[in-house]
Length: 554
Image (cartoon, rainbow, N blue to C red):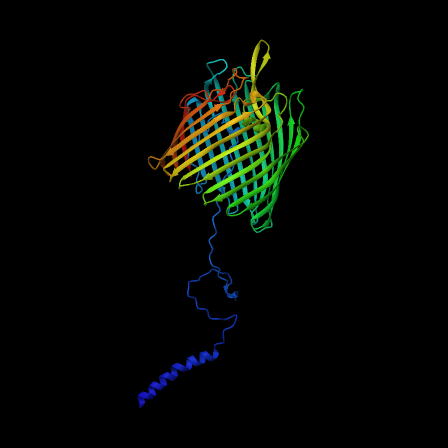
């Protein structure tokens, strides 16, 4: 009997606390409820005690990755190379190493210096500094008198770029300087030349993707000085360039916008018979964009004005359309155009050896540049590009040779001139890459030119082809080889009825060996065939030459 009493007393002692707790426990409410979590959920939420509703859980979605192709083509006028070979090693400064230095020296006094450092001042501030110097000093061929002459050419460039990231925009402030020192052939009108340049700029770029308008705007002040020209010294150019692009979203995949560029050019010629041709250009580009998973379309136009000199108004289309199918193939068509300023920087790019005789040439205008092409990647690591097009250009810049009389001697000069021209072109690009062990690339383009100025076609290509190959026999070593061939247009005003410049044959070889972490040794051998290749009239590139050096990443 006592045993039963003991059992009953134990049950009552256990039940009384539970009953008391049930009487004091309030019912579930909005601010106090019991949640059974079956999956681990451990968010880091500040002030969690203030959260009184559970966040909605959205099912994960996978969006189709947008494939972007580069539908642009190298313009046929961009086939000329630098007056000095660009001695670059394949290695590049990687993102995790802010510093990069390269130094090399070779035959004929060839020099290659490059330094770059990225300062990450804070999470929002970056400062990038870059310095480069390249050049040569040695004997080169004299195509006019025969034999050789002592040539030198040194180019120096420096740049600083600061960027600050705000909440909804990026601020960019930068500047640069440049100088080219070189001499000309002994029979040239001027013995040597120095081209000096500098610029400063400030710009903003919107980064808020949710904003109704997206914009970018920038202002540049560019200075340029030419030491020597025909009967003139110290010709100066000041260019103030202002650019803006504003775009608004109509729907999720449709945008409308307008781009504006204004250039104010001021000149100072120290020659009495040349008047300063200061002028202003205003280029307007309204456009409409439509982008989907398969289609991308741009409908626009260029309306370009100039005040002070030359043609006052020009117009050209700005239309591009592309369709992507099977995820790896894209067919595209475009019809574009627009103005190209023939400022002092453009003149140096066209030919550093050219001389201004009667003021700066008028600007070039491309009335239409129509292209049609197909890009694709049928197999992993393999790609191809087939293209064809037509260009119509007004006042295209070119350089020609002219003779002057000084006393009892005749001297030669390369002058800047312009002429109307048009061309049909078509070609193909093929490429293959296997991991980081092998890469192959092939390009071939054919051209058909027309111009009333016969001499304007002297440097134009009829056919241009290039083959490049790279392979890695062992992991630290990378070897590349390349061959370029260019056949020039035949003209009657140069060397007879079928006269033309000799075809360009350029065979080169380079190698890079990474023998320590961040330290590499590189070597380049150029013009292995020792050809007198001319990218500028009467100024052939160096013969067989080599260069080697070291590069460091830190």
